Image 1 (cartoon, rainbow, N blue to C red):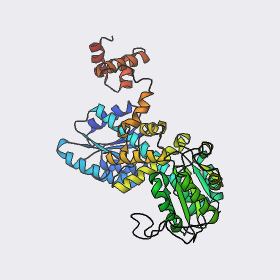
Image 2 (image 1 turned 180 degrees about the vertical axis):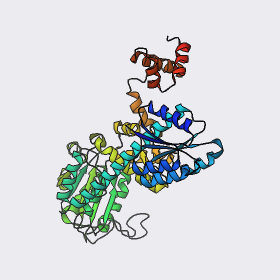
Image 3 (image 1 turned 30 degrees about the vertical axis):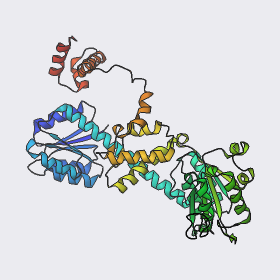
Image 4 (image 1 turned 120 degrees about the horizontal axis):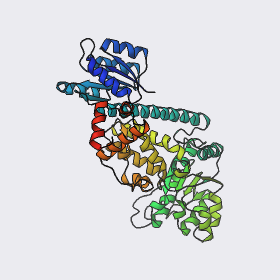
Length: 455
């Protein structure tokens, strides 16, 4: 049961707020002075603290400060007169959750307390996720040294074990994975945890370079080797000497370049375009692809001898839909990273919004998730990301599968009538008990019963 502290020196207001919230099932402690409220804060832990801003002994700002000192995640709602709204806004900048203007409307009070409790729960969940992230990264770093990779699922632990075994070796590696699964990050982790970590890591994206330029990128060229070659240029093999060369999307390499590439792997030497002298190199080759290279070989699109040279060791990265339990960890890490980079104060995400992200299939995998979270953080006006912050193309997938999406929408009047009817049915017509369930006075309930003809 959630605990709520109410501090107000006006006893009728104190009692009215206590009754309104007690009817919602909260455990209420009420105090009629700021001093008594501070004593309660020192001796107890509360989910929400409601305090009047202006009190004769200790004001609401002092209560706010002490509440935050006692528990940084305290949800403090200030009660303020219309003439002190500006002070309430200043208090929110100092850490207050919200404020309520006098005279207090009980429906608004109940809603703001509900949201404050939800915020506290979200903050606690996200703090837990952050702690899990820190512990996971420490464990990975201590055990494997792969501190930049996030994942606590079974498929990712299998990947970590592979990385631990292969990183210290000189073997060529072939990484399979859909677009956005983090193939370059894995390649960098292998390099950083191997004997070549102090030497160059050179990535080349074969899909982003035209066939006519790829050879020059790989092998370099001499001055005058072709039109536009106005000076000597070192290629990726030369730059990666004694280090690691990553060939991303290696399946995009044409067969002619494949033959020259194979020769370099076998002989550990090459010539620049237009050159006459061989250049010796010692390079570890890591390749990656989102295609089935074995099928490409059978179709004659990829050289079989090169394929076997590249796949001494094979790593298959799971798509994010096959490790959904990692999504909360990834989301939390991306929120922290994006908030820091963009100067935002977003600290978490609501349960409904996180559930929506977990249920989405993410065809672009981790890259798409990261971009989505960053966009949400940048556009958010609140500390907690909510379902409304999720882009429609992501959020809409969940809505399409919602069985209730085509249900008719009831008006407020119809909803109220239905709620009163259900309460009366549940209490076998006992109006006093029904009013307590609904959180309204008996007089209001009797008026509504007459208005809706529910007698």
